Amino acid sequence: MISRNLFNESFIDADAARRAHAWPFQEARRLLDVHLGGQTPKKGYVLFETGYGPSGLPHIGTFGEVIRTNMVRQAFQQLAPHIPTRLFTFSDDMDGLRKVPNNIPNKDMVAQHLGKPLTSIPDPFGTHESLGHHHNARFRTLLHSLGYEYTFISATECYKSGLFDTALRMVLQHYDAIMAVVLPTLRKERRATYAPFLPVCPRTNKVLQVPIISRDVKSGTIVYQEQESGLKVEVPVTGGSCKLQWKVDWGMRWHALSVDYEMSGKDLLDSMRLSSRICRTIGGVPPINLTYELFLDEKGQKISKSLGNGLAMEEWLRYAPVESLSLFMYQKPKVAKKISFDLLPKIVDEYIHALEQFSLQDEVQKLNNPVWHIHAGQPPSMTVPVSFSLLLNLLSACHTLDPAIVWRYVLRYAPNATAAPLLNRLIAHAIAYAHKFFLPSKHYRLPLEAERVALTNLYTALQEVSATTSSQELQRLLYEVGKQHPAVGDLHDWFRALYQILLGRDEGPRMGSFIALYGIQETLFLIKRVLDGKDLSRLSYGLANTKDHEQSKTCD
Image (cartoon, rainbow, N blue to C red; front, side, top):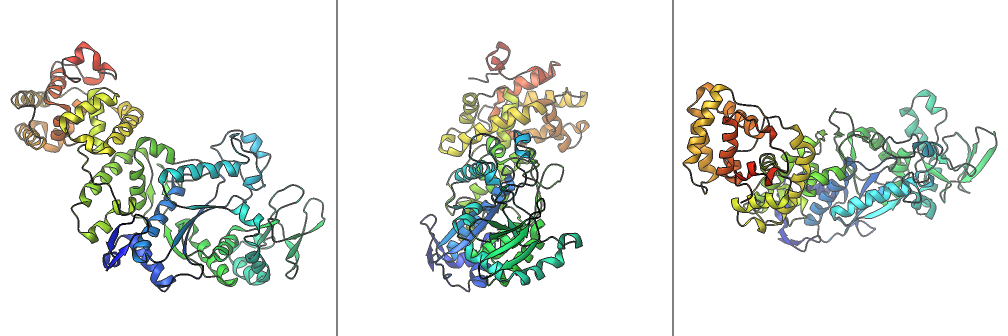
């Protein structure tokens, strides 16, 4: 059986989609078979939702939720191409700001507006009408860079436009039942003041956490008492005069929008269960949920929007291609992940490997390949002749950040490299990454006596090979030299010494591939300098035009 993919107009075997074990297909089958019973919802489409709180700048975990949800959506389209789908990215921008984020300017100005909805606080960046609008815009700009089809939904607009009014009246009608669900989960002190509704003060515009004195289901109003003046104030629960406590809000939103699928972090597991009960209480059906593990910074702490810790998405996209970010999000969503700059080269090379494997795989294997999910079923067909790690080591050895010079090396190594459009982006990212992280951390050393003898042997052996010797042959030559000099240690010690002496690092690429890319004569030049007692740290960036460096024929 062949089904049509509404995302990319390609055709796949629907039975293969049923057999695929990739987690997005597992989730899609659960949604289709368990939640929907194989049927199209009454609203006419399946709704996928992601949530975002714009109290701080969006962090990489925020986008991870969108990327992963979109992967499930794509898998669902393969299983049920006849059922339309939509993706809502929901911003909780009516929340009252409780504390000033660390990663924004003009903190003192923002501090004067604590307690107000995020869309009512002036923008400290001076570019938008409010803090909430600014963060929403940043979020949407980066989502556009991912190329996803989505609908942005603002909580402020939903509350004020009346879209939530019917559901809000349902919350008021089932007020006591909701309180019975929530109160047992709260501390004793909090129970005394808790109410599902948070009135927005007409006088201060602050979101108030105050007890509700009375309520009128028929008129759709509540009465609360102002803490400062003691006055009793009656407000409607509709039209943006109130918002809901967020756990009640979550359940209400699922019902109001008829959400079918939403992911959430492990830290929200209890909240998700509570919100699901509230959703059922007001007559709704909770969505299928995937609980994913948290994203952690280098210290193992949870990434926070207000703290601004962890690697930002803009930074990832500066130093690595967007496809690598998607791969990182695809991998093991139920395992906690530390996000650091050190992992970027590894992730990029894993993406390249998966891309090259795709054309060699059968249909089910392709559906289980991450690049199918990254590229909506149509990954580019190409071979990338140079890994990201190899490019970084090339930059380390050739002492240049000039992309034109890098391309000369690459084209000598792989004359057809221009057929891989990704490579141009990889070179630009590698230069940015090397300049920021790779080159400053280099630390060369001179060889020990046993290593010096082995390097002399290697120098002689390399003089006898041609410039077109393959990387495999060069690797075998390196193995043979290493085996002839047991005083250096085992082969691991031998290659580690080459990395430290020639590349200034403890780890490095497959040396045969590196020499083939860098060049026999260029490698001989490096070894000769070392044998002459000159460590390579004095070769600095920009030396490509000096007489000393011209001897290596780097720019030929």
